[in-house]
Length: 434
Image (spheres, one colour):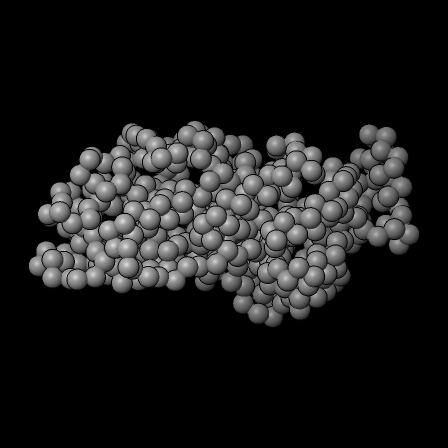
């Protein structure tokens, strides 16, 4: 155990120290605000306060962890060896910045509470983040800082032993459209034909007819392939099903369709299933509740996992709504336009509600990449995408973190904009499991 002295033990202090020591470094810690208790302790220890007590291992504290609410202030950057860091300290401190305040700033998503320009979907953008602006979006800096801090601490306490966590991987699959052509309503099917005809899409019209008359398989029906690959590579897989009512942004098969219900029930037998709340649930708790209950009625078990459609996330409201509905895990923490680590970490963390200054029971699982980001936003080829996947995986593996990817059943269909992508998913599984 490591004992930490600080002049004030706040919820923020407890939260971020636990993330760094307990979750990342697997080290038990305890706090004290009593100088005599700290001095008498013979094990590994350090002080986190304004001024060093004596000649102990000392980290100079920033005021962030002792404040309440959200304040707009200048974030000053420097380098720790070759790694960007912020909230610099003076020469008294054993490290050149306040690792705990900086980690809290990133993991709590402090910057997302500040006034900013949102994108067309009402989302906080990657380009607005300090991680993008300072070039470390594709590095899990909180985990990197933690391991570098441990090395510094071990110089002072060379005999200290602790366990080390293992690198892990989770494959997540979003089901925005379970089928390209089958099981759609009559109106939608006719509308699709008319739209294709108006754009002279002869081959698409043929595909529609061939699928509807069972001459060809529906190109988006790739579920058996995904489950087979799950078995071959022994990867943990979670499917997130969109079952909201039809809107411009929510175009899945109706949840009332028998074949769609059977697909969901069949998937539960082989993998975990979560909710993919529809586009307008970001600030609509009633709609979110309706969709959760709808999915629970299909699979006859409580829903504990969720990922927002379009990654539409408004903090803290969206997470507060999930907590009210007893959702335990969220997988929305990432960007649609860029790969990398939105919260600066590849370690799952509990959402800290800055509005109420408490750690909540909602566990956030940050992902590193989405197939649509690689294909639609970054315009990478399948080969280039595998290179990007390998780089991100190596960043996570270097800190023994959790690597999470997001693919869609559509991208395994090798159809239209996903031509050439059929093998990307299986090749990725080889890379991440190697």
